Image 1: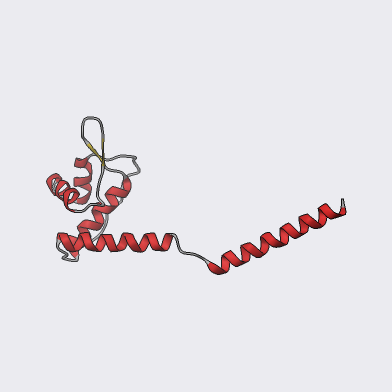
Image 2 (image 1 turned 90 degrees about the vertical axis):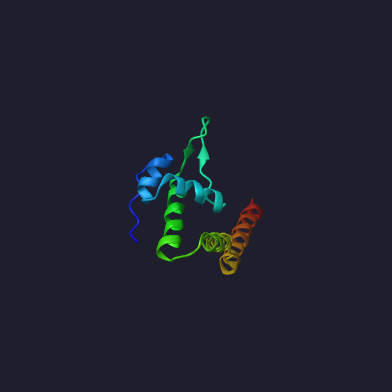
Length: 119
C-alpha cells in the first residue's frame, strides 16, 4: 500500500485525515476508541486536531488492518510492541561510548590540574 505524502501543516482536521487515508471519518473515530495510542488533541469546541505523527499512525493502522489483515485487537497489540521496541532503542546504553567519554573527561581534568599546579 503506497502512503501518500503528508502536507507540511501543524494540525489536520478529521475530514482532511480521512481524505488522506482514504477512510471514512467514523472509521477514524472508531480507531481512536480502540487503539489507545491514537489520541488526537481537541480544540475548545471539541474538534479533533491531528498532528503529523497522528496522521502517520493512521497510515500505520490502515496498513496493519487492510494490507496485513490484522484484527483491530491484533493491530493494537502490534502497535504496543512497536512502541516498546522504540522506547527500548531510544534509551540504549552505549558502554564503549561512555568509557571513551569518561577517559576524555579524566584526561581533560588532569591537564587542567597540571596547568593549575604550574601557576
